[in-house]
Length: 419
Image (cartoon, helix red, strand yellow):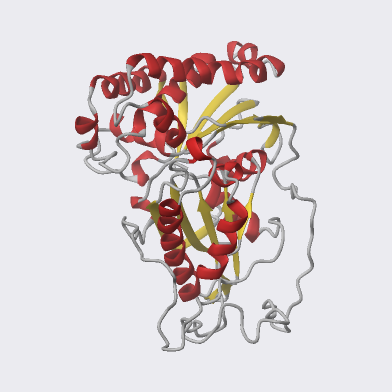
């Protein structure tokens, strides 16, 4: 757990500034020991014509967000002509991998969870190579922060997919996520609460909106996530009324000192605070409120949800069993057991901070990563992942069977998930 003061969003939290060697045309040079172009090995996808990593003269960027529950990718190029849309999406992918499955009991990432995750990351790496991204950032969050075998896992990921995972803190996760949804903040209110209910943790940021760029005044990350809570408190696929209320109370208790320290309740009483929620729990609740037959990001992202409507959806979900929740178009079988733990956390947050309504953001970490890479503010230099090694027969040598399941999403409009 942590409660840390943070720098403005446009400051590199790592403090590292690595210089990039460039060719005369401005493209990043291959590494000295690469033996060729970045990401180019025998059998690798061909580089796009007209310059690697560029489309219409613009570089292509890729962001991979590996959470406790989901593995998600967004590939985009800058869009300087449109002030409302900072980038144009080239490709996207999302898959439920449940990397944190069993982590709370054993303290390690399980073999099956790692297999599912490596399979999903292999798809991400292939898409990145095909799009010729000139800069890539791949981050890991709460599950990897907790796992004792994370070093072995990250080495395996690089060996089998070519992706280099970067472990980030809860504070950096909150700051990057805020950069992704900052455009939803209302500048007429001086303060904002931005929360992210993930698979392994929940992050809350206390934001100053009075300046040109929103600034993180403080943030707190606690290990209350939908995957770990479901494993700890659910009986099979069901969460009892008692355990739902227990999670809500624990959430409220976890942020109470943080709230008091920064005078958040008093600021809410003065009408100075807006609330923005991101991640699968709040976007699911919003989609259910709209009675969408299937989840639609275009209808959910940016909408305002009243507390009365939010609690009506939560109460309806609590009255259903798992089979009934799984039939709802915005949930489905793969996430039906995670919705109630997330709603319990959400209820705890909104009980502590009683605002009239909140804004819903189907954007966050990946979008923030892309924006900061495009602004040159993400640490380090990233390259496209190399192609996986092949054996002497010329066949791909993954060393594992692809057992993951899920949809290959080519449009972010249809993707949704939790952490």
